[in-house]
Image (cartoon, rainbow over all chains, first blue to last red):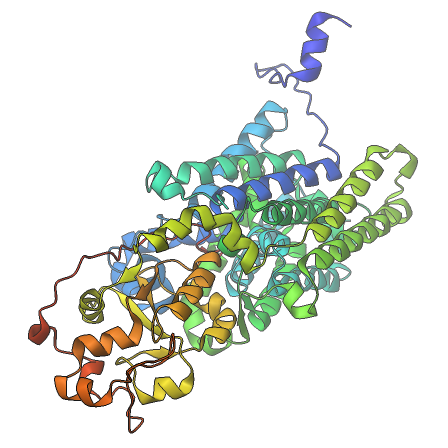
Length: 192
Length: 409
């Protein structure tokens, strides 16, 4: 093996980005390895800050921040929004906003370095691009609504609450899988 | 128990969020290398051919779980200060079902859609926009079903309490449960996805064994009880008692009773009979032996809460102080000299001469009361202008460290 080859094996060298050079996307890592890394990240979060991970909470606060810029009176009159952005309260003043921003930065960086950044639309074989966009939007709306009702999404409830043994988080996790499996058969043409 | 760190004190308010940003970046990288930026891979979970989602999630959960409780077992991490998502059972289940529907239609959950959008996937972007819309819709409609949204509340409620077994045993059971789920998942991948299990890495058996062994070891070490906790902080906290830094003089308590910025809890830990005879205005009576049942609720109080533990003298109050401090309740103090000293300070001369018991036993009332009038004595809420007491101010609000809120932010 050449010296360069052996270095490449251990150091993540960014894939060539010059126009016209075909980029080789690296394979994803073994799921168990990814899971172990995920566990270490989640533990580090609890260990250092006392908080777990989160995503939808950060999205929520960014949205409320936007609402507070546009319609501050409405925010001050709605109990749910008031808690995060009433009066002088800054909805961005929360750890979960920064975790969420980190997820975007980390996801992009990893995708770029591994040659997996690509403008495309992932979809099932029988679904057109436009249909896929529409379904993604609808699914996202369900997900956003459900996540707020459950007070957390897959990251904030299932992962974080699950690791510290919250009863509600485990019940929640089974409900998510139950909801998905219950509907999966009927919408199989979307993915298969 | 030095962890979790008080990052706000160490780094400053906004700077402390840099740690969250770094954690978020690591989280984003892990989601991306797991392949969670690709909706097809996520949706495949529900068609049994590719169980990556289950494998990554459950591995993450049990690994983090074993590490958290191992750190707690060796007194590195204070589990009382780790945020545990409060249980709102039915809103969680209904929300979860709605999310399951969203997952199979849209192909993501909120976190993975961000990773997907960040790696250029347009379906991820549309999903994230949809999620914002759903969140917006929730904020606008939750007012109409608030009763349900706040229903079936159990607070900080963990599986060991639910099953009435030790934390360690719960961990071992969940690790075994996860391993069975992985074996099941691999069989599903073989049957429905045509996966060749012989090609799966052998190290996963070693990893599974290590994890299970770790859980068993942590189970045998056990989680620290109040006494263990006191022993780890004794060197710091015993001098505080000896220097009388937390024994608060009557004059300061009187001032705190009138301070609107502070949520003062006058915690009377005497038995009910003594409490009924006489107590301070607005004091709550929780006898010393019932304090352990209320620690969770004490820790959940607002940041401006100050606990003033009150006994007849100081003996029982000091023990309660130790219990509360060991169990991570912030801002705990005790009334100097207890109720007896309070009466000596504020009762009229007439009462003091007629009611004094010459030789009272330790930690019992030093005065006789003919009727149980509770706080309907003037000395239950003395007028500070009349007494004009001088005191050394000792109460200082400590910012609580540890988890503040879950992913619901």
